[in-house]
Image (cartoon, rainbow, N blue to C red; front, side, top):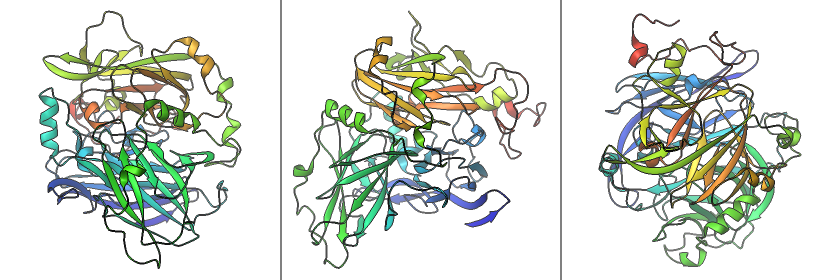
Length: 533
């Protein structure tokens, strides 16, 4: 890693090698994906407005891409790292991502985006730190820890694909990992009286998790780039793909160790991941199982979880990446130009179980949608309304919603299946205005939080329930809107949103960057007749 600086920004240069390794965090050896031989991979540590140059070398036997979960990639969907924006990095090849952490701060993570690779690892933490001139709304912690939690399967990714392609659901996970390690294998050392920032991300495949530390309170301070109203919790729900920051003070009596406990939510049997929290100078570890985990377990009810979600709110008075207060954008006073209603469901299509959005199960294209749009290539994707269509038979399709740059849009997610869903929109954060049970109706707007709703990029939708978010479309590009459960995304639960000014002219680079000179071309875009216009 090395750094340079121009007149305005710092540039960070990294070389990462993606490779296979064999790990057995739960006692069963399986093949995993590592970055520079590590799982989790190396920390991507940036400061607001840094420009990252990350050269990714693919030594796998399959095409590969990384995506940057939560980074907004301002004006730059060219480097988003999903199949709809980028050609994959072929085996033995490399490609350099270049993107800026423009006007953002917070806790995020990166992970693979193709072919269930995310279930094999390949993830790592991202921090975007405040510039020194911008105050943080809490005292500087004594240290920080990245805590990547997630469910884990002992089966190989190819076996997981086999389950899904035969129309079967994945079985229950085999366990919970903390920073790639099984129960009692990860250690965190605290000094008595000191305060620590823990940046927690759920990088698992499908399981919502409860996070807590035995005997300690969690002060929630940030969620996916937004500073929150500060509130203490005994435990916090972290759903697939979500990230948050808590402050923890080592204010308990020193003893050999306390447990950091991560347990599964809404599934049986309840699974536990456990790490050791050590007080420096207090001696060794508790023997595994010295404290009953059942006594620390969380309540599994959806009602409890939704009530907790409603308490997570934005801090209106502090700044984030900029000095102006987060609450200065009065989103509740802006007229909505459009409502998108996205219903996720399941259906049998062509004899196979698929996941659908408004009756369409996403079918990947050989040509990235961003390239097809740039070169005006016909027949690659179909524009859809973003609303359910009556009497539509479930079908495969490469669906794109057209959206106008600078519109203020409501997106309502309706969940028709009996399991919790999480949705993520690349390129944006959105205001989580409301959630409730049953079907959404326009009358639900009377229940919205139009003052201090949390502003994040990944949101949960409870079973037989809805969640409504508000988003200002101020970032041109082709943006992926997807399930954060890689298995459901593999089965088609995703869609794209094309945000543009509706003109055939080349976008102003102040609104969208031009195609990078190193952009890979594939599919129809590889034709020698097209070139790099």
